[in-house]
Image 1 (cartoon, one colour):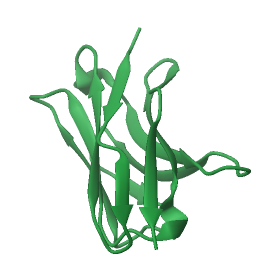
Image 2 (image 1 turned 180 degrees about the vertical axis):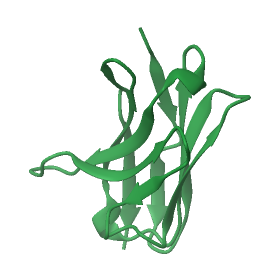
Image 3 (image 1 turned 90 degrees about the vertical axis):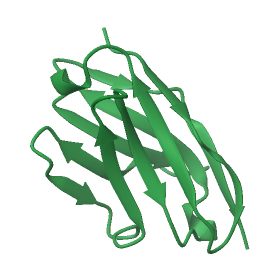
Image 4 (image 1 turned 135 degrees about the vertical axis):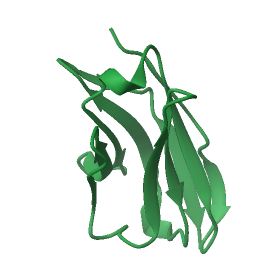
Length: 114
């Protein structure tokens, strides 16, 4: 069983930055893929960024160049650094971990004001 606890959401003005954190219970090295998803009201949940065990990253086209996914094995935590935020980035952000099963965090609200 893997538990994910997110933190770091909040309200920020357009052009600002936020860093989301996802603390993973147990050894993060056993996670095959770590990712961040988001869901805005009325929209489906969408992939924002993901990173594999060997460090391969993928980003949604809408965030490429602005967001960065990273991980810290010592802290068993992975992150989403979000820069140059736009109002359209407003959503609930969820962290995700894939091992044998798929696990989700509880979600954290990110609101970007214009």
